[in-house]
Amino acid sequence: MQSTPNYLWSTEDLLGQGATASVYKARNKKSGELVAVKVFNSASYLRPQEVQMREFEMLRKLNHKNIVKLFAVEETGSSKQKVLVMEYCSSGSLLNVLEDPANAFGLAESEFLIVLQCVVAGMNHLRENGVVHRDIKPGNIMRLVGEDGQSIYKLTDFGAARELEDDEKFVSVYGTEEYLHPDVYERAVLRKPQQKAFGVTVDLWSIGVTFYHAATGSLPFVPFGGPRRNKEIMYRITTEKPPGAIAGIQRQENGSIEWSYELPITCCLSTGLKDQLIPILANILEVDQEKCWGFDQFFAGTNDILHRMVVDVFSLQQASSHRIYIHSYNTTTKFLDAVFKQTNIVPHHQEYFFEGHLYELDPNLQAHHFCRTTESSPLTLLSTSEQPEDVVGVRYRDPALEFPKFLPRVDVVADCSAAKSALGAAHQTLRVGQALRRGRELLARGLHWVMLRKKARLQRVRSIPSPSSPPSSEQLAPTSAPPLQVDEELSQCSHSIFDFQGALDGILAELVKDRQQVHEDKSIQQMECCLEKMQMIHKQFKKARTCLSECWGHGAGMSLQRPRGKMGDLGLLGSAVASWNPQNGLGWKGPAELFCLCVLTVALGAEPGNEVAAPSWVIIIIGSMMQRV
Image 1 (tube, rainbow, N blue to C red):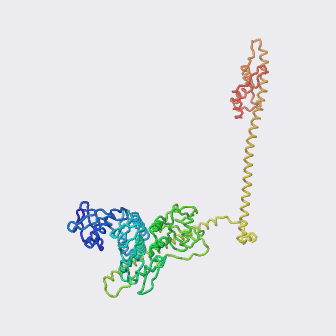
Image 2 (cartoon, rainbow, N blue to C red):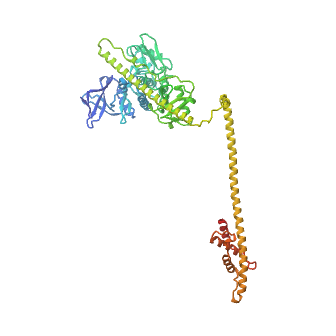
Image 3 (cartoon, rainbow, N blue to C red):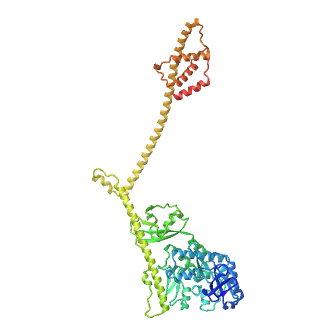
């Protein structure tokens, strides 16, 4: 057991070991919290004091979720050795993940994207602080599983790190052989004297090798016998690599080098992601530091991938699955072009189904408005071309070829390696089988949807009523006309329909105009009827007044006098009402209307000598009466 004032650990809980230090799992004495302690050995104190303190100061300066945190710097009680107390990552390193037989042929696409995002974010923080790591490799990328079950990767081991700006150089050599830049490899591994200075791009080479390793499960540059056994060929492969090549393998002793410009078919990444990743690898795995990308270009390229969305597509005729990486602001036109690059189906021949329904894409629709797809629920692509599409299916290498040959003798080390390789091949077999089964299910589902659509079309055709008698040969003759003639006839029919529509619009306008005229004529008839009634009332009024005058003349002896003015007219009004006969043709509708007409009679029937003017209330009553009539 060893301890510092606040932490305690057992030397049996070893997490990792390097040339200058060992890392152990420890606990806080008070809280019991798990931490990682880096204990430096005696060899580390042979370094200059500035170098010894560099890692302490570097970790204190850096603070990012994708960089292992430094909690404290303490000393052991007896030997006074320096101890770094750091964040504990319980899931090991990226190297541990890649050594799992399930990842013998590389990480799954979703996990690789997490590695890409975390490493890029951590490196971006280093460059913002002017730090070059100089020992990037899967073993120095720790893994932590978050509360949501998703992996978080963190950069660690800053013993070789130092501050270095983009335009600065360094001459000291650090790193791990397989991940070293060729210039550094020449001096550090081959021990060749040279006065080359190195820049920040050495980290980019290491990142490129790490990403290739994570994507494929193997190193990109492998001489016969392995990098550690054939160092000269290893150096030759990395320095003679042609532009654009991302891997080189020597399969036989003194044999030629097989260059590869693509990721292997056994890789678990989709074609869509491979197409985005390969140009980045080709430009950072560049031995010429003048031609190699800088960090600005690297961050731009990787962030372009990370900010894209994925649309899953299954090509029905080709029986192949595709993942389309596009930006959320890209329109349907861009999406169709991306599909064409992977399937060779031109955009105007692409027809899509989603969940059994025809899925029409507006040309200006942005990708973030597309339906959400997955590998098991993709957009199903149907080619409408008359030319048959080539069947592609699931592209894979026969996993049986990956099984190792077993040695006839007992060799524990060789048997362990063979067993691990066999288990990796078994996982690959399972992965290929799952892909084939998923493709079969998508193929059956897509064919079912196409059959349903054809059936619906057939039912619509059958629902069209057939003629009572079979058509004659003269009626069938036009059907043999060439397509061009049919198009001309359809065009003429279209013009005729538009002309007929224009004529109908004119008739409708005339009809509306006639309705307005009829309404005006009806109003005139109402006014004429009203005037006729007024004249008849006036005649009745005059007749009643004559009769009353005679009655007043006979009743002179009884001192009866005719009232004058308006009151006299009202008396006459009463007489007119009394002498009213329903048979006289006036057509009264009720007492209220009769009263209005009588009031009008008073206004019109005044004697010239009286000069009685029609008051305003009479005019109002006339208007009301006309409305009722």
